[in-house]
Length: 326
Image (cartoon, rainbow, N blue to C red; front, side, top):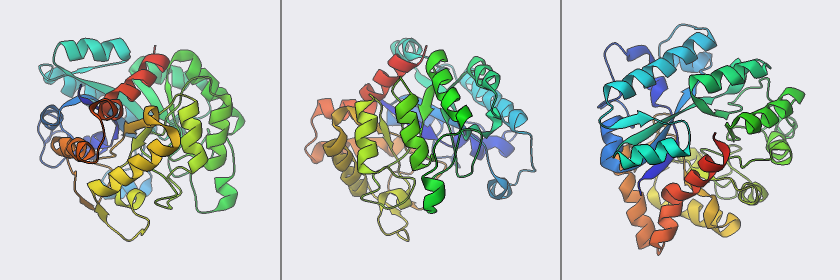
C-alpha cells in the first residue's frame, strides 16, 4: 500500500504563479503529481492555507478576500487533477480512495488550514464541505472564531475553545469532517478531546518532549489522541524535530526518534505522516515526495516490521478517514 500524507502547502506556493506553473511536474515544489507517483503515494491532503500579512508579502500577493482565495485554490487543485486524471483523482471519503487505488490513481483531498474564514458561522463549514473540504485545521498562529493558537505565552496557551469552537466541533462530527488540532492551544486541544465524539488528528505535529516547540504535542496529548482513535502526522520541519531550535537540519534519524517515542506512548495505531512539505524550510533530507521511500527504508533498518510500516504509511490514516468522513 502507498503512503498517505496528511499535510502539504503546495497550493500556497502555486497560488500567484498558476499562469506559469502547474502541479503536474514542478521543480519549484516539493510535492507535485509526478513526484507523488514516483514516491508511491496513495493519497495526498492539500491544504488551503490562509496566509497572514507576512506570508502574503513572502509570496508576493496583495491582500485578498479569504473566500475568494479559498475558492481559487480549490479550483486550481480540481482543474489540475482533471488535467492529470491518468495519475490522480479527487477523493472525498474512504471509498473514493479505495476506488482510485484500484484504478492505479493517487487520491487528492482538500483541507483548510486556519478556520478564520468560517467567521463563527456553521453554514460556512457546510459550504466548505459541499466545495470538497474534508478537514479543517481549526487554528493557525492567531486567535480566530474557534479559539486560540499555540503560544509561548502560557495565558494564551491555556485558553480553551470559544463557545462557537465547541459548537463547530460537534457540527464537524455530525457532517463528517476531520478535526485537526495542529496549531491549536493546549486548552483548545483538551476541549476538542472532551467534545469530539469522533477521532480527531494532529495532522503535522511531533513530540514536545523531544523538541520543545509549542506546536508539538505533550505526552498526555499523544496518549489522548491514541485513546480517541486519532492519528499524529509526523512533521518534517527542523524546528519540530530538533530540541535545538537553531538547528536547520531535518534528518531521517530524528524522524525515527520521534516516531518511536510517539509509538511507545500512544501505540502503533496513532502513527501517521504529515510532512508539511512546501510549508517548511531548512536542510531537508526528505525534500520531495520522490524521496519518501527513504524514510520507510530507514524504518525497516530500524527494526520496524512490514505491518508496522504499513500502519504508519497509510492504514492508520485510512481508519480515521473511514470512521469520520461520509
